[in-house]
Length: 194
Image (cartoon, rainbow, N blue to C red):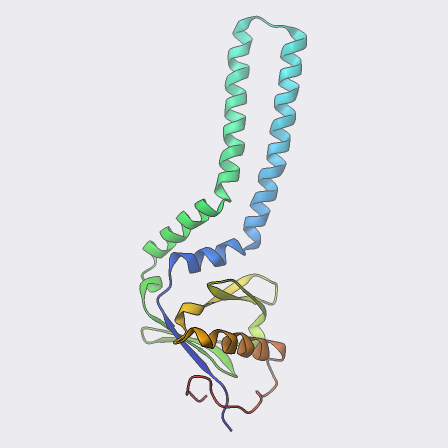
């Protein structure tokens, strides 16, 4: 019985790492924290403005108040900037430069038993039970673990033909629906057998 497998070959790009980073729960937590801090800063600045307007202090008090306002606003802007896509892209590129493994050719096999990744003689296999679902973008599939966190990427550019994208989607759906069930008998989409 032929078990369907699909093999992808690619070299990771910064956008692959970026896709993983944008789906991380930590990013959403950082954005919520930055939003909370922005509210605190705005309330503080409003209170400072009211205090200065009511107390009508001498001009010497306006300078420290203005400096404090600038520092608080700059802090909030920096907190938001950390979670922007531009900042994440910069960090993804830095990860790519620091890690030589991300510059090596990858071979990924989507098979009935596992997702297997080979990089320069090292093989890592993930049982389908490790993953809970996947999401799809125009560039890739992102496999999510059981907690919903991004775990692995499957770049569409790694397929030998763009016509294999629906086949890849179907295989991922099939293997993730019931990771313990044997696959339905069919011919391999790219001529490989498992």
